[in-house]
Image 1 (cartoon, rainbow, N blue to C red):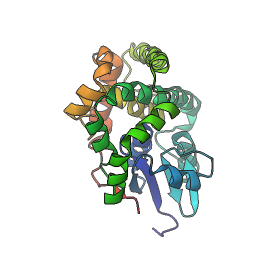
Image 2: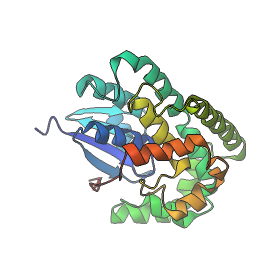
Image 3: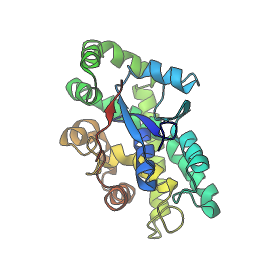
Length: 260
């Protein structure tokens, strides 16, 4: 494969949107190189590369082309690496609708978890700097109070918005429970699709599947996701854990490259 054909996926380790695309690429057996970014230091490079006045990940690079945000990446992969077995044409519309539904709750989930997670600064710093270069590690740790303040303001991590986020999360978990109440294994059709990957990956920080190297740790489960215990036994989150066990496998079999 030529350099022009190779794919590079820019991610942040704790990002469930990044996990969505990582899972999709792995499941479809599409070759790629993952490049891990350090939160906040990632902002300017993603703003420049994405050319959409946004700093979000994931971002997929193909030669000199960059595709930012998970639903746009799914569209690009379908057109340029398709047909995708996770996006069958005959049920594509329904799959995309469910993808939209769960993409929407990604930010509320992050808002909800950081609200409690910020009470444990040492843990947050360790997660954020997992793949940091030495100078990035120093910057994040020394400027953490400023970063935290900016993050909370930009992501609306406050009591009012977190309460709204909790209601939205609960609503979608109940929707998923109802969807699964007929005993179905997959959300659409009889095989794993983008709908399942999206729902499972976006809910993974609440479900804490053992296959995820961050969400599965005791510290994450108790200190960051601890507030989500009200849903821990939900059939919806049990389904997420089953999806990981049966259709995901261990993440980062190949260690991400540290951003250059």
